[in-house]
Length: 293
Image (cartoon, one colour):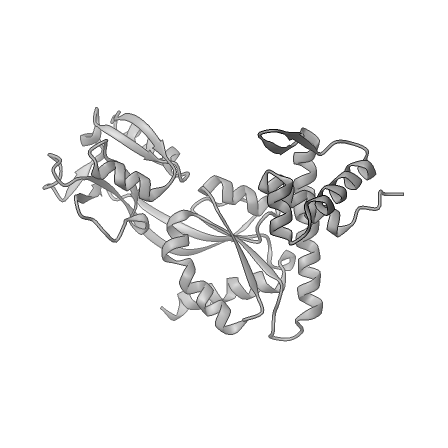
């Protein structure tokens, strides 16, 4: 017989693995620390192996625990879809919709989409996972999220284009390039450059190499606001999508790239017959909005 693993045990295990401690997991789950610890201990005893490494610096999954965590996420996602299907018949939906999104879309696109989702389906809760383009694609494949918003696609996933913008260069307003309006990648050769860590850096590196341009990459910065602040302070220039541009451009100059470099963001999901009701409703809402515009 397969070990009798309970939903509570899986939820406790997932929370501890993601939060990094039993205390933080207990707070998240509104349970006592001892109850969380007991659930995880019984789970480890049931499956016959250690899933977590407990240490002074925090709690991390073992190699087996990392594999088990991926399966627990899938199992819990299935339970949530089952609950949504049973408790929200007809047009009224419930449950939790897990969305993975790149930083720029999280700030500029997602709020409007979620506002329409809430207006049509107020019973749907949303859990956001912010990451890089490659991370989000992997999360959709692994079932960690049901919907991804990313520029990366995959042969096993359904991709719907939802937004397009251009990559632009950002330099300090006092930079020698600031008055040119548009520049070529070749003009960046030898210049100090800061790379965004959002996942588009690989594409930019390939394009720079093709243009025989070899800037001096001094730093990889994942947070867009930090990246822009570093450019403003004269630590280097950067290239980022227009959607990621800050509203406050004081001290900065935005330059178009020649030739034009375009980015397409996609709504990424598993095939429709594998999605829960909330994910289907969200995907249809977004694509319907695109047709309306």
